Image 1: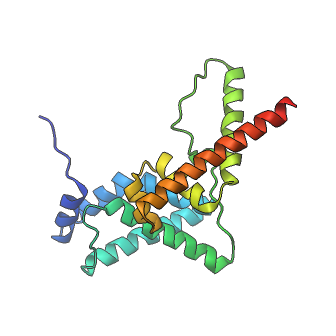
Image 2: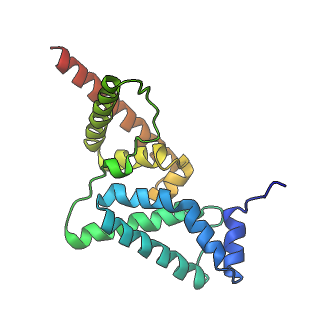
Length: 194
């Protein structure tokens, strides 16, 4: 018999009714996306783990006080909390955030390349690294939308909620990110050919 998975709202209602296991289910459902969103900002596994824990402590505290009002928007709400805590970390340490990745948690790990031999594998690794370097050069707002969309798999409405902007602004940032990436790739190709 097929088991029906409860949606976020059902799990939250059960959690508020006293079923603590439902919060565990929500955390397990989204831990990878939330942790990665944090890690891509702070670029330090230990700090990301601390912020991840703080994020869910805030989630539990807010829900416990009856202040959760984001009906149907649980993941964007949690990512917004994680993003704000990540930015608070940088404000407290007076460091500027850079969104980058490492082999530990590669935002391009979900991209599929034909890796039939070691030469192709090396070329594909260079392509990924080159793309990472170009993404680092994008303005922060464009970089954030690009990563939330392609790695976090968030809709533009969810990205707008997380970034506290309109859907059109999120779409515009993505458009400019892709235009800028295309220009940088073309410039790099032209430079390599000369």
